[in-house]
Image (cartoon, rainbow, N blue to C red; front, top):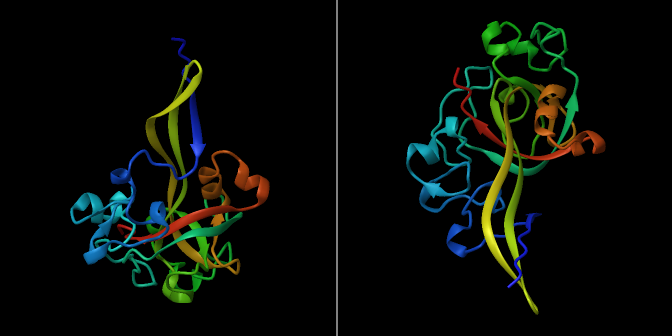
Length: 222
């Protein structure tokens, strides 16, 4: 028997069996868990800290906490999927993390927050479809993620048939936490260019001028 093994990465929602299928969050089309269970970063429902802690990237029904900013802390796990994210050159490091220097909308309320607060995360403007708007959004934090799901398969050549069997599934997700400092008008996010580049691992976002991302309000940990 002649055997030829080839591993291919298919960017499709393929799963090898039903029991492994994600139940919630961005991996399951934005679904939430029944019975008020938490949705983990990997898309499964549960009630332990691994599922519910914002620090472990819980997606919905998460443990809540204050953001420490002017917005009052919308850290209840509000989230949205397939949101347009463009980029803006805030250049916070070069501008001394000064919200006034970049004419950020939230500077009215947050310009005098401590430097450690202003520089803790990258910056973004927010006008997404889910979550608070205007002043209520200022100071809140978002977990931004891009998601590609693959299934590695193995192909066996056994004359005269070609047999295909799954090797393993893998998740490849780029994430970044950002703080809302500004407003936008694109219906999604306008990320600082540095954050955008971190998420744009293959350069496709730069080529087309935007990324499609998922976001979730999380506890800033301030």
